[in-house]
Amino acid sequence: MADRQLDVLVICGSLRKGSYNAALARTLPALAPAGMKLRPAPPFETFPIYNFDIQNSSGFPADVNTWADAIRSADGVIIVSPEYNWSIPGGLKNAIDWVSRMKEQPFKDKPVALQSAAGGILGGSRMQYHLRQSLTSVDVILFGRPEVIVTFAPQKFDEKTLELKDETAIGMIKQQLAEFEKFIRRVSPKE
Amino acid sequence: MATLNVVSICGSLRKGSFNAMVQRLLPSLAPDGMSIKPAPSFADFPLYNADIQNSTGFPAPVNTLADAIRAADGVIFCTPEYNFSIPGGLKNAIDWVSRLQNQPFAGKPVALQSAAPGPVGGARVQYDLRKAMMFLDAFTLNKPEIFIGNSASKFDEKTGELKDETTRGLIKQQLAAFATFIARVAAKS
Image (cartoon, rainbow over all chains, first blue to last red; front, top):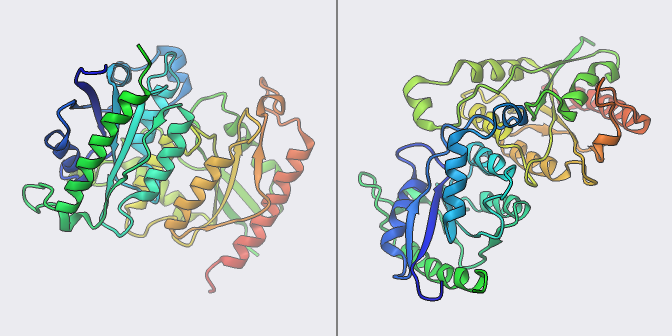
């Protein structure tokens, strides 16, 4: 781990195509330090609504296992998500709820960093603080600062290409990714 | 005063859910003049995606749940806590209806209950739900709060009966307080 390139998974909390958060997630690879490679997580869109009876009768759905495997195999995870109704999008929370029930729970001891973009002045921060609370329950190792909170998103992304244009936000993301690399190397199991 | 029509929403989908047991119990503990019926299910909602909403509109079960909430004088949530917060499926249901015009929770009296096997009894799901409900302009009842901790010891797992008298008393109190609250916050006619 000391010198190899880190493999980091990016999870987007929104399913819509024109999502600012999906756009934000797409900008990350270009802003990552050389020691970190980013890949998008498999989709959670097709997960059924969590029901213990499904888990108990037919086991975990295949796409839940695929998602969990992707998390397990990564050195770290970045969650990029909008805020819905002052909290975590139900779909994203549903995905976390599913994998939280697994043996060899994939988030356990996983370094996780958070980012959000939103139209308003708080930039999805309330979602981030709820997510911190839930991720504590699944025993991740949460990255603290710098936080990436992209406020007033429509002004900061190109309307047509959805490219992130805001230099301050770009600088903040670069900083977070660089710090997240150090963080992952620090908290990873000692070899 | 006319009968208060209240709908209950259970946050868990599993058949043996303690919260579903609480939900089934409510009619028997309601004060005179309050009818409590289960709301239509959110089990078949797709995960929220604005592209679905924009291309094919709101799915039928979303409209059905929203209509039931709109028609009710109040809403009671009986929900477990998943990972220190709101179950994703329940939050997804709230996210869907939150996007409707004539948003169903606006101005709606809401009461919260949770049962959980641990000592905290689902307190964290309730405080997160309060925030989401506040955003949606609901009127959420403050007290008494119903946290059914150590739920496995309080229910008969076979019959679903709530054996704990203290909890039964507390639920009765909350439902009575909810009736008063609904009357108080109802729009003046």
